[in-house]
Image 1 (cartoon, rainbow, N blue to C red):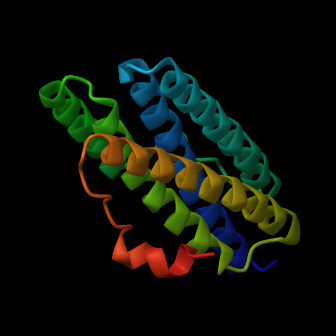
Image 2 (tube, rainbow, N blue to C red):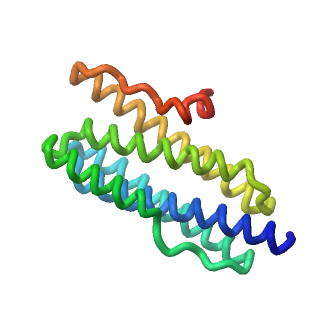
Length: 170
């Protein structure tokens, strides 16, 4: 790979590392706030999954002689603060947590889909592809649980984000 291509691959992978670190923190926070033992367990599992994904990607960045990102995105800190505010007013309502977790997962899906359009080394591309499949499965699980919670509460299902919904159908 040329230096520019290498730098671009490092940048893309570091963006995914930040996304995974954000997801790990978001799911850990949601796990602490959830009332349902099943949701606590699921959110904890997804937090650990994202930590593992970030660690895998760290190795790929280092193999490209790059420095792995150590933090998440600033916007994610704001989003977690918003979750704290919403759940404080909703009384740590699991439905509100699911709504916000699904919103975060929309962002993660898009980040992975965008990364898959980039020219990455073949080993990195394979890892990103595998992780992308698991990110989409987690998103779909959270979305389905959110829709179920909304149906039980008599609320309409929240439509998927129009920006990402066309990309992720199937």
